[in-house]
Every structure is written in C-alpha cells, then in structure tokens.
Image (cartoon, rainbow, N blue to C red; front, side):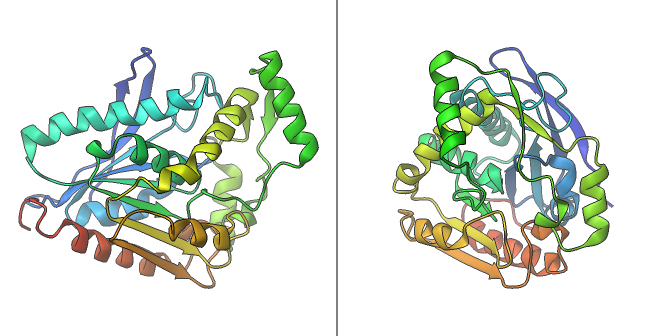
Length: 293
C-alpha cells in the first residue's frame, strides 16, 4: 500500500511549510497533482483520494497552507493574499524543475478542495504557465456562510486600523456541515490539526481573494473540472454553476453528487467521485507527454 511521505519546502520568506508526497505507483507515472485544502482541513483529511490517485499513476503533492495542518507557526494567520498565492506558485515552480528532470513533459494539475478552490483559481489565473489543468472539488468560490453587514463593517474598520492579529472563530464548527457520516464527524471534532480560529489578517486575505475570483475565471483557458456536493450547506452551488459558465476554458466538465454533504472524501459517494476524477485525469492527460502506464 502506498503511504505518504512528509516533506517541507522553504518559502521565500524563509518559512518552512509542510507538504505530503504520495509517490505514484512503481513503474507508472501519468502526471503530478498539486492539491490545496480547505479553510479548516489539512492534507491528512484526504488520504483516501490521494492514495487512489497515486495507485493510478499520479504523484500527489498535498500542501498544508501556512498556519494550518502540520504548520504550527502563526496558526490561522496570513499576512496578505499575495503571500498565500506566492507559496503555491513557488512550490509549482520548484515542482516544474523536478518534473523536467524526472518526467519531462509530464502534466501538472492544480487541485483545489473547498476553500482551496478559491486559492487555486487565483493561482491558475495569475500563473497559467505553471499548470496544465485545474480541478476544483466542492470549491469555495461562492459560500453560503457569509458575514453579515456588521461583520463586514468591522472587517473594513480592521483593515483601515491595521488590526490583523485578533483571532476569530471559523463559523463552521458543526462537523455535520462537512459530512453526514458520524464516524467522520467524530474525526473532525477530535482532530488536533483541524483549524478552529483564524486571524483578522487571514479574513482580510480571504476577502481580497473573493474580490479576484470573478475576474480570474475569465482568464483560465486550461481544462477545468468542477465537482459539487448536491447537499452542500457550505457552498452556494447555484452561484458556482453560474461562475463555471464563465470560465474561458473550452474543455470543462462538471459533476454533481446529489445526496452528498460538503466533503466528498467523507461521504458514501467517495468511490464515485474518485472514479470520476480519475476518468477526467485520464482524458485530460492523454497525449500530453506523460509516461505510458
């Protein structure tokens, strides 16, 4: 059985950031998948799908966002959205160099899960040269859970007054928002690496990313996959569908799993969603120079 390797890379501000590497099965390499997790989760939530992709010949590089997961420094913080974007683009640049040595021409897919879909979309729009395709799994491009006018007023005031360090509880503390499965609900509730709070600085970075998403999709021409959970209480699926129609890509697909809650990884439909993801990856990578199976 393929198991993850734990690594770190050094960001341009000298911060050491954790990531998991799921090496592709022996003798098989179809491409690289660089994955970004949600606002509360981390790479460890997605072992099942990562292992399945690795067994099918894709190397999975799952990054823990700074301040999240195995990154203990400055928990829940982000100095600004460009810092988050640059962490990902730097990793992609370094991966591109390794790809050129190990498997020249092998495709690189950027995968954004939940909140990570927002970050992945902005990265893809800014640096299309670094990726070959974009996969967005129940992406946080448009959220149901949004701050009211008073919270927005206070956030605007914090921006003007440079108040950034104050911690704020993430309004997603109920595990049933993520999954209908009680065992996985207990996992989320008891997971010591699940992020419970973020700083005002992170909320401001998130707000800046939100402002960029609508314009970003119009410039994304690579193949795009969107996967939605039909019973999602976190994501505004109708708004995501409308946004999906505005992606510039001529090669885009959408799948929806009608009875599933937000985190497809934890739902009974996970085999279906992984099979569909692998089917799309096979279609997308065909003829792009990856090594034969």
